[in-house]
Amino acid sequence: MNAFHEALFPLDIALGARGGPERRTDIVALGSGREQRNARWARSRRKWQAGYGVKTFADLDAIVAFFEERRGRLYGFRFRDPLDHSSAAPGAPISPFDQTIGRGDGAVATFQLTKSYGGSFAPYQRTIAKPAGAARVAVGGVELAADRFTLDPATGRIALAAPAAAGAAVTAGFLFDTPARFDDDHLDIDHSAFGAGEIPRISIVELFL
Image 1 (tube, rainbow, N blue to C red):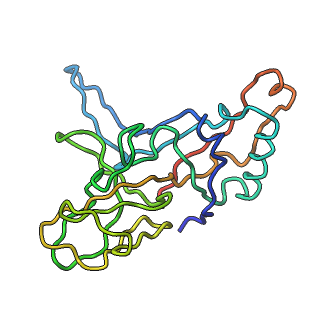
Image 2: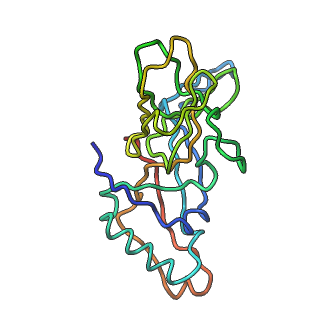
């Protein structure tokens, strides 16, 4: 299992990062002009350049300290994706009905947080392993009181106080971080160039836990 620190990458810097999801697809062009496409990855993987969020020498100092404590690429950490860190639509508050995370069968009481992307044709369901703060949960369209479930902040699993009734939709709303690591064991920062406006390179990549 990957070594992981439950530490949040400096938030002010993360919110200025640039990046997004990546997929790996093999494409073979046939003689007829048609293509054969094959997905090499079942899941997308996010990558960011966080140097765009560095504005001051104090920011650089914070990054160096965070990098050293993580021992470069050795330890993972929490990263707040500036675009995608909520179960709700951008700018909307979370609600207990944002995401369907499972359906009851009368026996199972533990459910994994997930987030769905896309419509009804071929939605992609992403596992959410690092919730940030409390979640709101509903079963069968009725929100549960906070003492009727527990949330594991390290895994994103919700344990209901009692199994959900058969067929009842289990839904949740939450904020979340992405497990990530540095993509280099070296920070190449030219302090004089930074003062002249050059962006330092700080590569970060999503971790699959």
